Image (cartoon, rainbow, N blue to C red; front, side, top):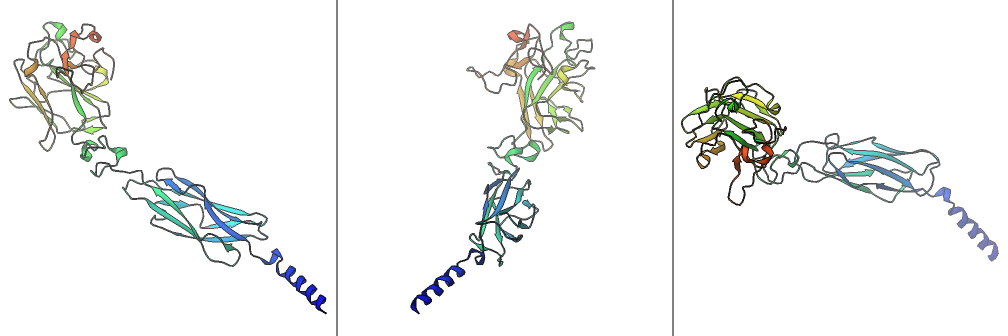
Length: 334
């Protein structure tokens, strides 16, 4: 009798441990738990410890600090595991925006249900913002020409435009060789010029003004937008003729620039009356009969003597030319 009881107990244990009576265990994982805001994509996978005997539908719950459709999208709100398969997946992708944000999270969990035993309660994905603002001026570093120096939106994040005066002709040489504006006539006032180069992003200088020591000499007309790495040449007057390195070309609205060889001070003001650029002719006043130019072109670091500007014809790359409005010293385009 005792042996029969043991046999019955053994059979009962075998039946009770039949795997068909045990629900499959499920875990959830991600192939990437940190997403860039700009192009982040990750696959969320639900995996069983065995193949499914029938289709399993796993409704998802989305939480966290990130907002659905604003900060991220999901290919589905459920994960399906087909019969005969042991896993299913969805795709999560980040959404780009221009807001400066802290790290945001997506918490994905599976609703409680009776088909599986959940081994993982949820998974957390972080979205990393790419709109950082290092200098705190409200302009994202990706759009900020001066990311380490607080600036203004109209200057692409710089405290002032990244404009420089690269070349100035205030004393045109005598004779036809002094015809800097290319209109066929050498006229001292008309052939004077100032060459501006934009080292930053596109900037609208409409309404900005140029003054000498005496008075306003030029107002930049509406629509004066200098592109990034663009050049603008302002002549004293005449009818400029030529390509000038594809630069924007204007003539002084006041009729002349009137840069005095004996010493003068050129100032650019913005629409708020702030000083943007200056050029002091006094240290260069030796009646050069040629332009003064930065050397090398666009150089912003003075040499050991504190000089930025040099007489044009004395530079080897100039090939003896007295000026190069709109182009580099050697006559090539910027």
